[in-house]
View 1: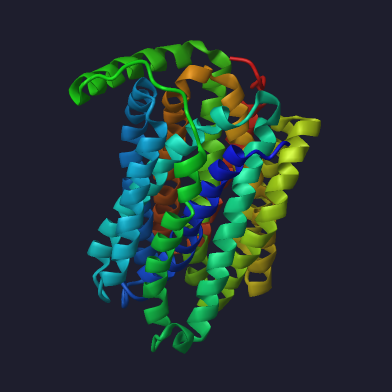
View 2 (view 1 turned 90 degrees about the vertical axis):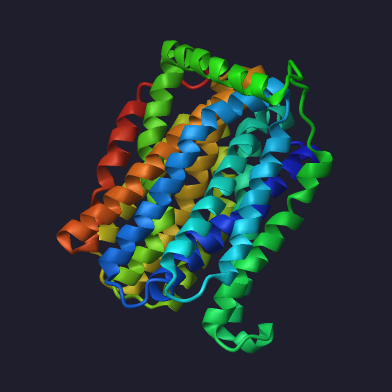
Length: 414
């Protein structure tokens, strides 16, 4: 792959915002939400609350995504809308520093809005992929973005974990103070490493420059038209349904794994170490999946990743020792970046080049709709049965059903 400046600048946004995905979504927020903002609450109740927060934020993004994509395409302002949502995410992430102990409602509100900013910016980030990569490079370009994300997120996570073990290095008195400070570090990191995209990524102009009300109405009209088109594009529609199912399981594991480990009684230190394993294994694994997609086919790579997740789900429901959690972290690191990168590149090949934000709005809508169901299902099953293992087992059906639907998808066709 010819690594042009524009491709690298685009991929650096993965490096930038993966700090939020790794440290906030997967790492420190679940820990702090359970032990600091929900102190004294049962583990199943705090798991249910975390699942509900993730579900509500994902619902908001799901409802907005297609219309936002249509408007961005219409104006040719994909990058501008990316920056607007990213700024929202950065600001609310930093604001988590201000939330006091026991105030889980305010923490949940700040986190939900930050998650909307993060997820909304990813709609427009994904939609820029066809403009920074040739068709023959799209698997490797997509995988390169995810690999940089794993590396960048892993580096900042390693720094934050080191500081939690040595609070005085950061001028803090306790581990809790360092975790609060980490939310500010994530916001600053996210902002700094977004700058290459700001300066170097280019996109074609849109078709019109209408007043905001006219653009919004046009967005709703195009939304209806696009939905009808997607339903008629059988191959695209089947892929989106398959993606909705298997990415549900993937996103739920990302958002709930640390909370699940805490519910089983594993130490916070061990869980963060497992998260580091996932990040640094994910860096070369995402690159490897990009080459695997080139050589053996994108669909083959996705099937391999689904198989790994099925194994992770089954073993995760039965594990009793911390070393098993480390093993699962290694396996997730192998598959997570690959399934995300190859899904994105497969879809990019199947959609019209001049309406990428619009179609990626639907793509992200399916992903966020999945993220509503999965965390809620896992939290609800854990609360109803009093057993967190029942929650993770509920994810198995999602991977199996998604894999079955994927059999009928023909990559590269509409």
